[in-house]
Image (cartoon, rainbow, N blue to C red; front, side, top):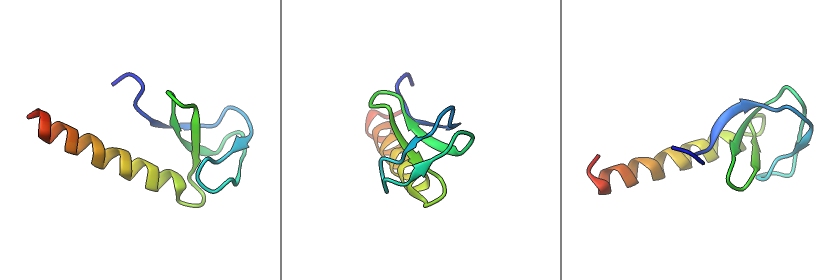
Length: 66
């Protein structure tokens, strides 16, 4: 859905919202477009954020009966 987070390659340097680590251009990141939050893959922050989002999306789908 529009606004859902997704994995992508960083286009510029930045800071991970989870661990405050450095994110370099070219790194794999998990990105939340609505809040512009970035989570690194190196320290597992992105993996954790991705799993949390998937779990919430699954719960929402089950409640909605999709």
